[in-house]
Image (tube, rainbow over all chains, first blue to last red; front, side, top):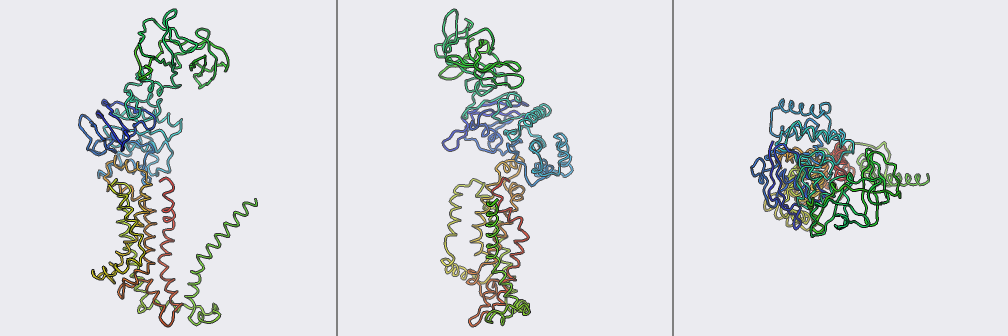
Length: 354
Length: 276
């Protein structure tokens, strides 16, 4: 187990800055996700942590010790790759035991350890198969086994689920979480899937074009996103934004096209223009609120997402269960002011106005 | 229906024509080698199967005729050329494909540039250099010369293959604690066996069949099989039967190699196209 610290990490490929001054501290035993769309620098950051790529500047510390000059093995990290990178000419047993074999450990020690890991991952019946004779999920477990047997101080996962189908992805996600709970090894996980990040992590680092946009717990990034970018990236369905203005009629309101949301008077109205964001679970459709017309009804099982329009605006509401609302139907919309998030229109940063 | 018939017709016709073109000379060589000179010089050629004889084979295998020692020389030279070519070539190719060396593109272009001179242009200076270094008519000399044109091909073919080995495999090995040399030895080499075999067989065949440099750079001791065969064509007569018997004998190792490693050669040359 170990702590990991990234200090002012910069990575340039020629003129292109892939990672721009990232600072990150991972505590012992934490599960941290690097989250962002492709090209945000998350994999580069992971590769630099692993020692597979050099940093252009900045320092990487593991357990308080600078490891910039060390190779991946000396850093005592183990990595699970996106396409698993299993050695195609080796059996499951040889794949898992390769790192021990390189260190010339006695044969029976290697066999015992491989056996233990294989049992834990339910691979013990597949020991003599080659990777190409395994299913995707089994290959994935071999890749994890190869990492686990090292008993590393840090696990690195590079989008390990992206080659699995949806059902298997959910199952493996649970397995990884259990593995982390059992072994308690500090883990860094790279993904572009916000749901994966929310469900697995102790901390999420949201990256944007090489910058660290926000670093916080899943709760923080979901409920208190640092910027519009984070708010947009996290959560399903995507957060809705309104470009309107504060007005004072019978009390303070936020006016967006023909509709307006009443606000508590305690809000400190700033001088800069403000956008408002709201998630679907804070929007109620029914007989109170402002008028709108239903445009889209999307049932997803436990909920139905209903998108409504009014003159100058649109929002998606989450309705429990299967809804029998129909497009073009008139309805009233109420937005709970507690769910409102305020963003500076110019900087796109979130503002605390309540 | 008609289209399928047409496709099949043309496919079969094409394959038949190709087979005929490719095998025709071979069949003719075998037939010729089994007939006495008198049948071959008769007009029209006397193909009476009653005349079939293995006399030509017995004659050419007589040790005084040079073919036997030629085959041995060819074998030594081809074996060393392909073995050394593979060892040096695979390491060079891996370095050029993966080690991020400065100027590796320039090095590659230079390697390719050495192939742009026709043999006839370099053979005279080459002969002078070889004779000053006393390498004319030695196995070693011929091996070096063959390596000079086989290595670039080996390097280019293998570099292409090594580049198709997924980067993440090597990264996984690095994370597992393998040094670059160990990665090459335990990961890259084993999964590269098919292309290595294919390239090795290719190098062997090139060296085995080479004629031009061999005839200029050898005199007595290191005559290769191809030269021994050519020597059946004399100033006053050509011993076609013996010449072709020798040719048939000389092609046996090459054909055997191709058959034994057929699976590897096929895999080797399609490997790059599919994901490893």
